[in-house]
Every structure is written in C-alpha cells, then in structure tokens.
Amino acid sequence: MKQLLLLLYCFLALDPVFSQKYDYVWLSGVYNLADDSATNFIVDFKTFPPVVDKIDSKTLMIDANISMSDKDGELAFYTNMCKVKNSEHETLYNGEGLSLGPFHDFYCGVSGTYNLPQGVFALPGTDQAYDLFHLRGLIDPPGPNFVCWRGALLHSRIDMNAQQGKGAVVFKDSVLLEACLQTACANRHANGHDWWILAADNTDNRFYRFLSTPNGIEGPWIQDINNPTTQDTFFYLGWSEFSPDGEYFLVYDVHSGAAVYAFDRCTGLLSSLWNLPGDPDSYGWSAAFSPDSRFVYIVRDHFSSIRQFDLHAADITASQTTVAVWDSFFFYQQGSGGPRQTFFNYFQHGPDGKLYNWAGDTKYMHVMNFPNRKGTQCDLVQRAVELPYYTSGANAYYPNYRLGPVDGSACDSLGIDNLPVALFRHDVEDTLAPLAVTFTDLSYYAPTAWHWDFGDGGASQDTSPVHVFPAAGTYNVCLTVSNAFASDTFCRMVQVGTVGLSELLPVLPRAQVSPNPAATCSACRCPP
Image 1 (cartoon, rainbow, N blue to C red):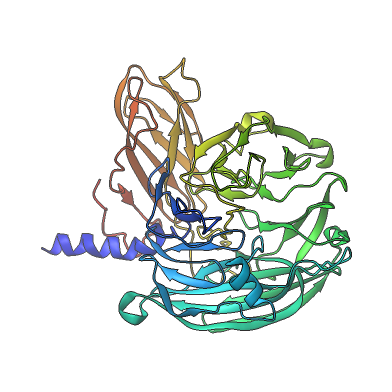
Image 2: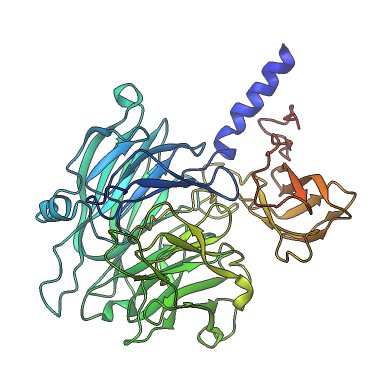
C-alpha cells in the first residue's frame, strides 16, 4: 500500500509538467449555415497523426476563433468571438454577446462571427479557469485609406468549473486598450509562470505590452520602435507570433513583408530589427516560425507560394527560398459558391511538430512535415489532410504553452526549473525503404541530451535520427531526454515494414522521471 501511495504521489506531482495540451483539439468548419450538410469538425492531436472527425455542432467558425482544450487535451470550450460554447456545444452562462461594441450587431448578427484573423487567444489559469484576450473589430473598410481593422484589446475570464461543470463567462469585454491595432499575441515570461502580451500599433512605430499574472493584468507599457509593416495604406491583414523558443517576435503585413525582432523575456522589450521584404503587388495572409525557431515561412505571390528565410544566415534576406508553389488544384462543393483555389492560407503549429496550412475556403489542409529542415527538404505536401466540410480561414492562434522559464536568468525568480518532457513522432519518408524510419523529437522544457533505444539493439544520441530496422515487425522505441534538473523517458510501440506507420499505435506509460539533483519525486520511479 505504501508503494502504491508513493507512485500515486509521483504521478500527481508530475501531472502539471506532463499535461500542457491546451492546443490539442482544433474545432472548425461551417462557413454557410444555409447549407444543410454543414457541420463542425475537430482535428484531435491526442494521437499522432491527428484524428479528423465531424461533430454534432453547427457554429460558424471563420477567421476569429479559438478552441481550447484542458491540460489533458480534452476540449474545454470554443468561441467565434460572438458566443462561447462548452464541449457539449451548449452556450456558457453569460456566454452570449462577447466582444460588444459599435459593430457587434454587424459581425454577430449579419455575419454570425467576427472576420478578424488572429482575433482571439486564451491563456490557462488554475483549476479550469482561462483568460480570453480578444480584439474588437470595426465594420468593413469604408474607403481606400482605411487602416484600422481592429479597434480595441479586450479581456474576458472563463471558469469551466462553474454551473456544475458546464462553464460560465465570469466577466467579459474588459477594455485593456483602445487603439488601432494590428494583432496581439502572448509569450511566456522568463520566470516560467506569467505571460507577456504584445500588440502592434497599425498606424505608428509603437508596440503595447501587458503582463498577465495571477494578480491581474499589468500595463499597458509603450515601446517606440520601428515597425515597417505599418506602411499599408489600405488595411492590415496579416499575422504576428512569437518563436517557439520565445526569443523572437514576428509581425507580418500583406504588402510590406515581415519584421522580426529579438525579444527579451525578462523585460518584454523588442530589439534588433530584421526586415524580411515583401512585394506591394504580391501578398499573402500569414507567416510562421519553424518549431526550432530557425526558419520563418511566409505566404506570398497572391497566396500561391511559400518562402523560407533562415534566421541563422549571415544575410537573412539573401537566404530567401521558395519551398512550395500552388499546384493549380481547384475545389468544388455544393453550396461553397463555385470552384475555389486551394491556395496557401493561414499557418497553424501542430503539437506533432508539423506546420499546417489551411487551404483557403476549401476542405483541405496542406502539411509541412519537416519545417526544421532547410529549403524544399521541409517537405510541404499539398492537400495532405481532407476535412469533412469546407471552411474559411479557420486559423486559431495558440501561444507556446510548453515553454518553460529561462533558467539562471535575472528573472528566474520563482524557482521553477525546466524539467524536460520526452515526446516523439515517427515517419517513413521513402515507401521504397520501409525499414528506414525518421524519428522527430517533440520534447519540451529545455532538454540538453537525448538517448534513443530503438528496441532492436540500436541506439542514438541525435536529436531526430533516422534508424534502419533489421526487419519488419513491432519495436518498443524509447526516448530519454535530460538536462541538469531531471530526465524523462517516453516509449511507444512502432510497427515497421509490413504495417503502415499511419496506423494509431499505443503509447506506453511514461517510463521514468528522475530529478537531478533530488526533488519532489527523487524517491520514486514511475513504472514503465
């Protein structure tokens, strides 16, 4: 009994570390409510590859949307910035009338949803509480010089334990800032606990920053720094995001190109501007960092190409490489309004280390399988995922919830260490060589060493190795990652050769965590 209690304590103590799956369920679909076949669907990353399924819901989810999972990857709530609904597709108590403002009736009454790219994101709190940050939009541009697409940054709070677990919006539409904004996004503070929120002004060289803490929202503070993406004379439609490692910040404009800054996670300040030039006559909607934060991908050429920039290059602009060109495929579905081009549209980071790109107003997603690779080796496959229903935009912005503190920094003041968590996926890149399996490391919380046991006597210390198995069969593959504070092992059964790797395979229980030096769980070993 004592041993069982010790094991239970071990798992409970490590639960907040292992469970950071707030971005594991993407809910989208329904572009036309008049279409009887319309339905929402989910892309569920609790297994790799993700499962795509229709669900019993019919809610418009266009540009401004977020579907938030709990820490274990189960859908908690979702919103289109007009209503907030729970996993049973019921509107939360006080969940109507979100983003109230002078044009709320236009968006939510006429359009049924806000048409604001990157218009909302959520940060998890404690005990099923979430902070929702959303942008209040303006009506469609009335003239050629209209530049203010987003007019305010709002804050709402959601408690999913309220109303007997059905959820409630505790308060909504608290105005944090009224300004002409491009977008807003979040990045973990260097202390590993709080969150920076950064918003770019759309009319001036100015950035606003806030700090979200358990005691409330602090700010805004203003930083005046050059922003070349404010030069758009029509209106801003683009993207901004922090790099997965938290060290860079990107702002992208449909015409002016991208601005990439160094970001100080202690102070929240930007520096060291790199301008990735655009083309006034050739635009696109979005940009994204690679998971390892080395590359920037930009949609250009009227949505028909994707370009890669290497932030490690001596000349970043000269490193520009076209990694994908639209293959001229058209999509048609009854009710969708005629043939639609499967262009490149919004990027979205997958928990599986891939970059997903929503193919415009169609029912497909393009997939970049290896975005950490240089040039066309990033392997973008067009229309790799077919969705149950066509959708528009469909992007959701998620901060990197699996980013830890900056250990040893001046702001590392809360005693939160990076305890690494092991995770990987596997792929066969060449069907003519089915025994050669590519393993992609997805571990987080700053590991510094990797050890692979392939279950056939082979091993590797590489981060993401390619291993050739001796014969077809099933192998128990384990990855152990470690740093100065702890180690962690993740195992799964991998079927090689005669069985396709696309099949869902069981994930074995986490093998062990051994903090070093000794910490909470130093007396226990979680069972394999």
